[in-house]
Amino acid sequence: MAEKRIGVGLIGCGDIAPTHAKALAEADGAELVACMDVVGASATSLGEEFGVPHTTKLDEILARPEVDLVTIATPAFTHDEITEAAARAGKHVLCEKPLAADLPDADSMIGDCEQAGVSLSTCFPLRYLGAAKWSKSLLEAGALGDVIEIRLRNMGEKKESYWTGGFSGRTQTDWRKSRAQSGGGIIITNLIHHIDLARAMTGLEVTRIFCEMGTFCTSVEVEDLGLASLRYENEAIGLVEGSSCLWGGSAEHDVSVLGTKGQVRFGLWSGQAEAYLTEEAEGIAAREWVTREFTDATHAEFYNDLAAALRAGRRPPVTGIDGRKALEIVLAIYRSADTGQPVHLPL
Ligand SMILES: NC(=O)c1ccc[n+]([C@@H]2O[C@H](COP(=O)([O-])OP(=O)(O)OC[C@H]3O[C@@H](n4cnc5c(N)ncnc54)[C@H](O)[C@@H]3O)[C@@H](O)[C@H]2O)c1
Image (cartoon, rainbow, N blue to C red; front, side, top):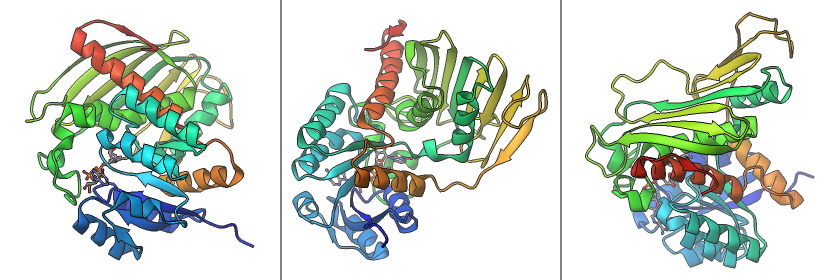
């Protein structure tokens, strides 16, 4: 007999919500069973599109017995309060990145879930990119040698309308412009994914950061261009480079890892990755570029893996602590930019 699917209640029906609803329609381990948004029209449109009950009341969605897990897809400054209520109602929590806009909120979310005995996971589905999984397998097999450099980039162009409506314009809001409500700009919004990927692929933690950033082309409070240099625990060095106003975009890879015996690199949405090794390993000849192609279903795979962990009573594949670690690196980047000084981790 097929195992029962994990029932998911989606809280927040804005820009990213349809990505979750579509992934849950694809996933076989979890399914969307209800949705909620403080804006009635947003809850109604998503509920009707995906054929699930919808509400504007948090208590109502949390009272549904068929909701095993809530996905929180609201702005960062609301994550703590919603997590506390969900944990108290005995629901597992999957929280969109960033886990919170500051560390005290992140700590209180982790504490609330621990106390209630429910699981807390952070939404970092890019770990399920074929390119990321292949890169991780090369690193774990030692094919690249020791990691000496990690480059993480999110260089692109965001329309002015993005700051008030996201990519789809489903919800009109201005939290993305406010540092207090969003935590920051391109670094916390986008590069937090890359930062998590680097941790997941290499297992290395960051020990020191120096950053320069600014707001040059956009009428927002948060940064639209930032560049940080990083030092990792094994002495490797790294670069985090982000912009939402790189006119015409960038031709460079979003993620590249250089080791003492080779390199691997990929664009997040390219569906492929390239590697070059100085010694034959993992079926790859020495000193020849190889390219691997991938078909990705990152969110659906993420939900399946999370559902399997919840059913088995295991730790989620991406934890609340993982969300906190990535947030801490991002906040250290901002602290360095604010103070003009290098910042040591942990904060
Ligand atoms: N993982 C990703 O790739 C990805 C992509 C985009 C956004 N996000 C994250 O997802 C979250 C939401 O982003 P978005 O772009 O969808 O934002 P959005 O503003 O488009 O949508 C958020 C929705 O939440 C609703 N909302 C606000 N406060 C609420 C509350 N207290 N209770 C219930 N609903 C509430 C709003 O009405 C809105 O419909 C953010 O944390 C963002 O960083 C993640």
